Length: 118
Length: 113
Image 1 (cartoon, helix red, strand yellow):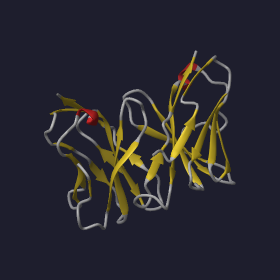
Image 2 (cartoon, one colour):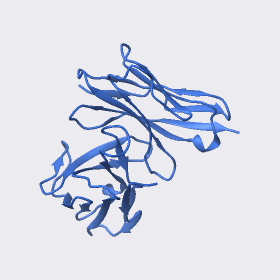
Image 3 (cartoon, each protein chain N blue to C red):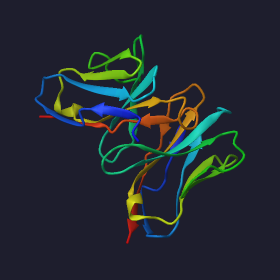
Image 4 (cartoon, helix red, strand yellow):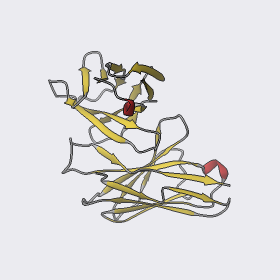
């Protein structure tokens, strides 16, 4: 079964609004979670590494003030797209490592969130 | 520099036949992990198989096997007895130790009935 959940699975919003996406690890604690972005027919692009209790580490070119990440607990990380614009429309997917499940360093992914900004 | 290359943007295979999806990688690290993920149209990334750089035997998981050739830096995925449900995007990924994941561009597999 799924080990990482995401909510919502899809969202449509107006330009200028903020959208929060939740990523939860199920039945395991994740001190580190990862946020990816995927455009149609392209590969995953790592946006940031979310660390529980500390600031997220952003990849080069990713706006920290645009994509706010909060890893408030060992099972929950949130990504907030602030003042969303149509170019932010994409598929956002999170992942986490469960050190007690599967081969070492395997990342387990959530089902993803499709964001459409009108 | 770390890099993953998947040279097949799309592949077709007849149901019940085997298919090989290519993946080559480039890294200067001695220790790393290689992964394959399946992404159906729903979008979820499903973990399929893992190969450690120091593993001497090729990894196998059910109908999936990984043809690991370390000297050639290749980690091809072999799917035996293809099923219609295998139609999806397949991503090869590498994770050098203490580093982030690097993904290939993906291969879209279509299984024909």
